[in-house]
Length: 134
Image (cartoon, rainbow, N blue to C red; front, side, top):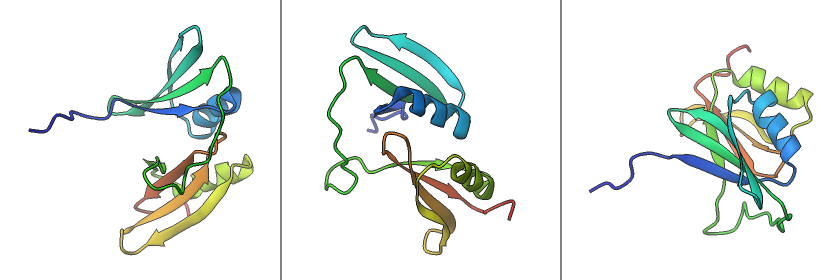
């Protein structure tokens, strides 16, 4: 029996909530949903589509940050699909967002991919079936 119905949300502990809100709303264009003050931390939600939410957390007391992208058994990245890799790449570049891997076609996967880092140093992959706009 499959006990998993769907993904409800993905959570990111933020380093800088203002930069994070700007990045996800203004750069990636995600619709802002709820804001909940939990006393010792604040939750900010964005709509990822299909009932899935992105949850950004701002803790009242800053937590220690450790980059775990390469550790075995650790979270690696989120992957978002885009319809316009070319336009997205331009917008990221114009706003000095760190692009780790420029868009390139991955033949074995059959689509284009790009890797970036958000303001929290969270690795994000974008994939698209075409570059569009180029």
